Amino acid sequence: MDPLNDAKIIDSWHKNATPWTAAVRESRIESRKAITNQAIIDAVLARKPTTALDIGCGEGWLARTLTAHGIRVLGVDVIPELVTAAQRAGGGDFRVASYEMIASGEFSTAPVDVAIANFSFLGKESVDGVVRRIPRLLTPAGALIVQTPHPGINSRDVPYVDGWRNGSWVGFSDDFSDPAPWYFRTLESWIGLFVSNGLAIVEMREPLHPTLQQPASVLFVAVAG
Image 1 (cartoon, rainbow, N blue to C red):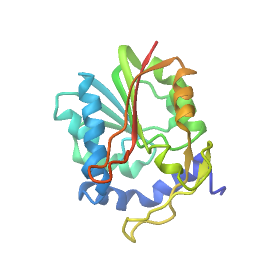
Image 2 (image 1 turned 60 degrees about the horizontal axis):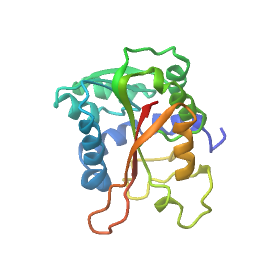
Image 3 (image 1 turned 90 degrees about the vertical axis):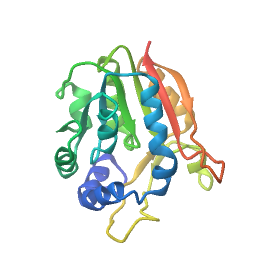
Image 4 (image 1 turned 90 degrees about the horizontal axis):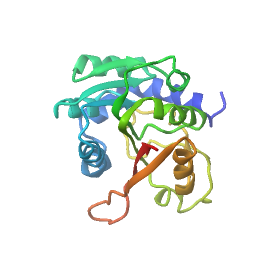
């Protein structure tokens, strides 16, 4: 298998679903615990939604959190083991669906107030397809909220150009293996992706690490316009 493509991302997550679930539920991921989890929660709650679609929901932590705030959440993921873990924990409606199913309209749901991709827009063609579909998944006042690694921080030692990059499990336990690659997009490319698909960015946040004072991520809020 080509080590740098969308299919390889899925292959890696099939292999790492169990250790990932444990790492999330035991709060082992420092950046998420300290910064980025609260950042995505705050961004979603600021929209005051009643319904949400969690794209690439993983084991369901975000859906459970939002459900506790009175939001009806549908979580989707392509990895059955992660969806099963989410279903067992409850706190939302969870289904298996690929990004290609979402992009084609094969997976359908009622329009939602927010569609969320929290560190789950990792690929190239798969992500392009979902973003094209997003305007049809939102209510008239709905928004897409995307949190992703900050392009500036993640391009210090390599050229600042779009392209595939190798993944890494540095900082994670030895239970993880075969890290997933990811498709790097410059800030300009992220903005272009949204705008070219009928989405207008109404807010961009850069959650800061509390001690390093460097962005831990970048967070986009976009509406159909």
